[in-house]
Image (tube, rainbow, N blue to C red; front, side, top):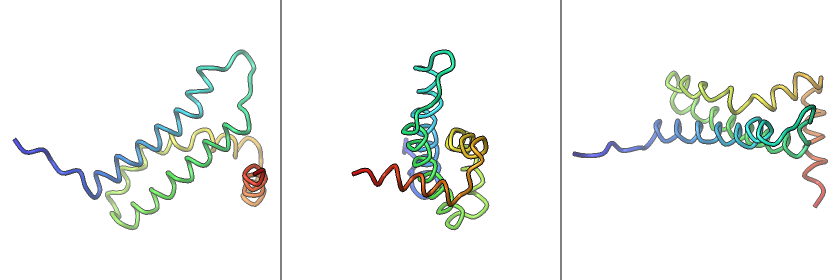
Length: 110
């Protein structure tokens, strides 16, 4: 019996789902595990989740150009990867310029 080759689209699909699950694990899942009562997520946790979301978005854009219609399967991982950054972005009322300025301040502290 021969095992199927995992290359091309299947590999990209696996990577995007792995990144989405990782983003969910370091964000909402970790927060649900350690939060008590009215705790709020730290800014570090939000930045980590946002960076993972940017990696997921980059993979999704690559897949869209490389695989066209088949890339729609990758959107199944979007709620996991984009939940925490999306909620922060919507509820905080920030615009994109302010958000990138905030990321620059966080990573500028060498």
